[in-house]
Amino acid sequence: MGRCFKSGDEEKLYWALSGQGGGSKKLKPNIVSFIIHDFGHVYPRNKYSYSKEIRQDVKDVCNVTLSGECIRPLLGKLKKTYHEKQNLSAEAKKSIFKNLYEINPPVSASDNIPIQQSDCGCRASTTICDLDTEPTVNKPDSVNNRNVSFNSNGQGSFCFYLGILIFAPFLNKLEKKGLHYIRQWLLAVMLGCQNIEQSKELNYTSLEAITGKSQKTLHSQRLSLKDAATKANTKDFMDAIKMLVRNMFYIAFQPFKEKYNNYRDDHVLFRHLTRSAGTICSTTNGVKVKLYPQMEYQPKTKRIISQVLDEINEMKPEIPDGSRRKIELILKS
Image: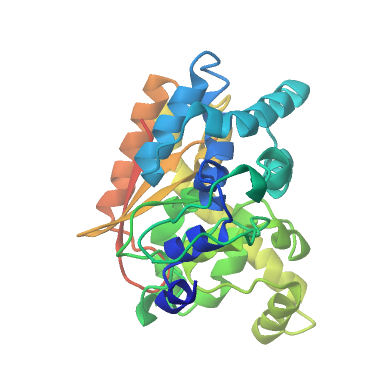
């Protein structure tokens, strides 16, 4: 146990503190988050072999092989919620994640033989790891990306809100003009927050993976707002941010609108795209981002979106965390 703590290796610490028993310990918080998100994408169109498809997605993204029995309780809870409400809202997903132990209870020490995990040289602990936290998808990398951004030396990681990187060219321009301090408020509005109070519902682990260090508490955000605006013009300042978000959205939306040429649902499709989760992976040239849309697109729509993403990639946008890494955006096939 001592060697695991000294190593600082998150993987070794997880195995050491996860208690005895092997099956359920593969369902780490980031994998559970990915399964919950992927279920909403896969199940509506594939009710026959959805479990197999989700497990294959987990293997492709997280490099972890899961059995059907391992995720059966989690999928059962997701199916029950889906059939009760005919969809999986953001609140329902968050509730299921927070009730992880109810879905996947810790294995009793009396029912299992102690096992040794990884190569840390210590026996498994009977201490239960607290999984009632936000999914951990990043590790510190370097001073250049503020010590919170995506680890450029690791494997791909699942992350929420990656769709906002469609606006990366505009965010890069703001940074060049010295307006990077309003970046967090811009992204919060893009993600549907109407005020600072609503921003507390955001997943800051994922947000920091994209933008670097963020103000997580309401108190710290209010202090930052006081530094950026006076008491007399605070409302005007926030209104300006909302107007800037609107302009950024419609400028980015225009190429998709022209190619899609269907006013009935073009706005909804693009809005869902900009709020997609996905995976982020380091490459020799920068960062590759694969978007997992919130809805199922027709083949023609997928081709149009891929064309729009290619046009954005030609601008060579940088991930807005200060690390100056180039982004490549692709759509999950």
